[in-house]
Amino acid sequence: MHPIALKLGSLSVHWYGVMVAMAFLVGLWAAGRRGMHAGIAAEKIVDMGPWLICGAIIGSRVLYVISYWQESFAGKPIGEIFMLWKGGLVYYGGLIGASLTCIAYLRLKKLPLWKVADILIPSLPLGCFFGRLGCFLNGCCYGRACDLPWAIRFPADNPQGSPTYPVHPTQLYDSLLNLCLYGFLAWLFRRRKFDGQVFGVYLVCYAVLRSLVEAFRGDYPEHQHYLGGWATPAHLVSILILVTGLVLLRVLPRLEPKRG
Image (cartoon, helix red, strand yellow):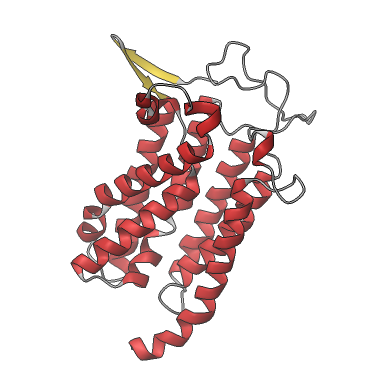
């Protein structure tokens, strides 16, 4: 666990922030390359970057604050909400925030929604690969106790209050699975049969992937376990994301001839 990358005088640069920044930069670069193959200039994709970043950060932070209000923010100065460098971003909140921002931006610029969605979406699991490494270095999003050979321990003086007993490295599970998902979506992008197919497949695959990793998470408080104790908040959102993906994969092919 190494939360601080370097210090510049009194300023500490945190690995979590470095990894999140790298996730956005690499993701935008990869999306620009895909845009050229789809007939949309890379500059148009990159120009969306600042707006998507803002939408993703705001959405992910809002959902985190709502989810962990009692544990992390109740009774504390309001400024704690804005201390992003300490960690505390919920991925599904970022996905929702970035999606809404993207829809508004594309309507304003009159760009094709589902084609651009297919261009952008493989960059999300690529970004998650870096983002979850940031979680690992930060000590958040840790797993349940286990005695497996690859179990990890956090130091006793860690600032996140992570457990010092051996736990599942769920951050690494998530990171590696997202890298595999990125490779699959990049392959599918060149073979897609209709606009929106890659986006729909991502929603289905990520919902399954995330649900698997959530089964090993150990950082949720007791009152955030539902459906008999096995489901986390992310499990519940994953169900909605899975259904949305399946509906899109069913509906979008029927719209393709009309669009053509």
